Every structure is written in structure tokens, then in C-alpha cells.
Length: 218
Ligand SMILES: C[S@@+](CC[C@H](N)C(=O)[O-])C[C@H]1O[C@@H](n2cnc3c(N)ncnc32)[C@H](O)[C@@H]1O
View 1 (cartoon, rainbow, N blue to C red):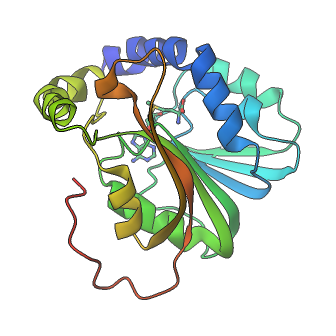
View 2: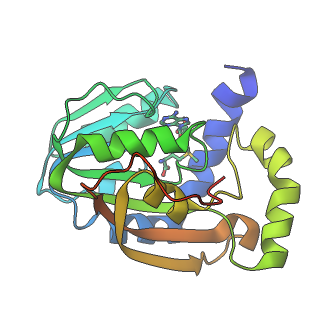
């Protein structure tokens, strides 16, 4: 990892993503989590404060240990055990069907193979489990989407692999998860190209996904 990715980007990200509106959205998403929970893309641990005490055990993965001291502080303030593994979500080291909830916030934009990660999410959820997601992605507005496509190469560099133009809902469905609920809105205080949010809940669809429908999921 280079100097920018290791020291500068995590501080920038942590500073921006602990803003008031981010906090409000994190709290709203996570309030229903309970039992055995997995978070993919822990980052600097900004979700930790918003998990309710009904969570029994939190597992978290991220390929990069980002701002370890801040993560340790946030982890110490949580009333349940938190186990962190530094690895990619595309290959999870858990048995099938073990998590009641899997959580992803502002992470599917960055995972190099989001489809593989989402197939893993589906695999590790219990048959009655829930995938909670809060992600930014491709706009439904053609002009905004065109700007997202244009600016994506730059965002990829300054956002350490972040993409502006992924169709999050299509990626989720294509991985064999069933979207039970989806909110689409533009986040307050964030430029539209990065503020087009996909917030929702998906469940493991146990029907065959060997031949998923063709989509423009990017
Ligand atoms: C924009 S940050 C969001 C962090 C955190 N989820 C939050 O809401 O503050 C994106 C995160 O995705 C992580 N990430 C990148 N590739 C990943 C992968 N293959 N598997 C899991 N996480 C990954 C990055 O290391 C980073 O922590």
C-alpha cells in the first residue's frame, strides 16, 4: 500500500464519513441488526457505535488495516465481542449459513469483484438472514450517469478503487439475493455523482442462480 492509500486517504475518508448525515444513515440502517453479524469493509470502524446491543457477536473483514488506533478505540466501546480479519470479502473464511445479518456500507463501490463478494454474502447468511446495505452508485438520471462514467477513472485513483457508476441493485440481484426493500435517494450535502444512494434489505434467494438474467450491473 502506498503512502496516500495508507496514511492520507483513510484520514480523509474517516473525516468525511463520520459527518452528521453519514451518522444518521448508519444508525437508521443498523438498528435492526441482531444475533451473529458480519460486516464487509470495516474501514475505520465508523459503524461500530451504531450496532444495537441485541448484536451478540460481530465479525468484520477488510483487506486493509486502516487507522488501527481509531478502530481499536471504537471497538473497545462496543458491548459485544468484535472479531476483525484482514481479508477480502470475495472469499470469506466462514461456513455456510452462519450469519443472521451481513452489513455493507459504502463498500460495494470499492470491492474489486463485487459479484463474488455478494455471492459470498448469500452463502454465509442463514436461510432467514438479512443483508443490510447502504451504498452509493449509478444514477438513474442519464446526465448524472454520464458524468459518473466520465469521472470514474479519476475517482478510482483518488478514492483508492472506488467506483461511482455501479448498479448496486442489479449486482445484488444477480448474486442470487432477493431485494425485499430498496430506497433510492440523493444524500444531503454530497455532490450527486457520489451521493446517489441505494439503501435496503436483501435476503438469500434459495432458488437456482446458475443462470442469472443478463444485466448491466458493471
Ligand atoms: C469507502 S470505505 C467504507 C468503509 C466503511 N464501510 C464505512 O462505511 O465507513 C470502503 C472500504 O472497502 C474496503 N474494501 C476494499 N476492497 C475490499 C474487499 N475486497 N473486501 C472487503 N472490503 C474491501 C476498503 O478497504 C475500505 O475500508
